[in-house]
Length: 274
Image (cartoon, rainbow, N blue to C red; front, side, top):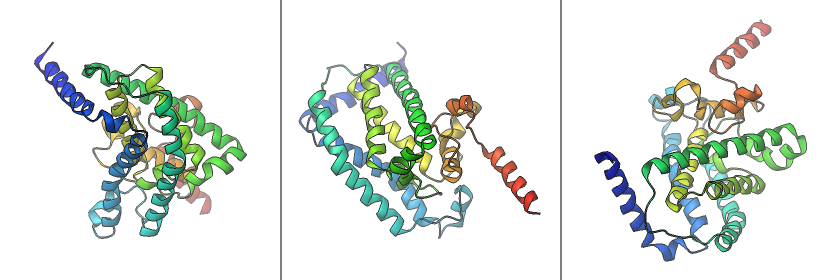
């Protein structure tokens, strides 16, 4: 084992030992819903600040995907109200069921860093497939879209709080996938928490409405990851880019729509008008 691997293993073990000291809190049926809500709002907070600074700092406009859109307090509070309502009325009962069905356990040893990375990536790829199929189905079947998914398309310009601005059925479906995948893959409880945080962050980033030089889709090579610009196009055009993160499912199903296609479409529309 190299020095870097030993250091990472030690860091994970220190983190895991600290978490085990809070077992009485983590084992509570209230912990999952409070953890979920706090992680989500924490991920949204930096982007919310950017949204309200955007009107004052013109520098931010160059990174905004739809610079003409403006986030207001009314929009923000509408989303927050729905998110809190869904967590209290729907996620909390589900977390109680999960608490009863699968009590939290704490093995003495933390997982290896390589194991954490592989398992988190596997969970993300599995979630990406599940959500792609769920999403495609809820767009192709009119009554499913109307009753269960239309609420999420209330805004055509994305911003961070739109991430969980959805119907109870949609939120419960995605929560089910998120909870199920680490169980199916036999992940360590620490890996499960890291996946949960990573999944929420990536989902918020995909809805952020910003395209920064350090955005995940610019760091992952070969266009394998869609990111914020990819998902913003979905909210704008509806029938493209169904996958939440990666692009391979949209490529296979012929639903991938990129910036180049958008530019060609815009040019065609202008030509037709002329």
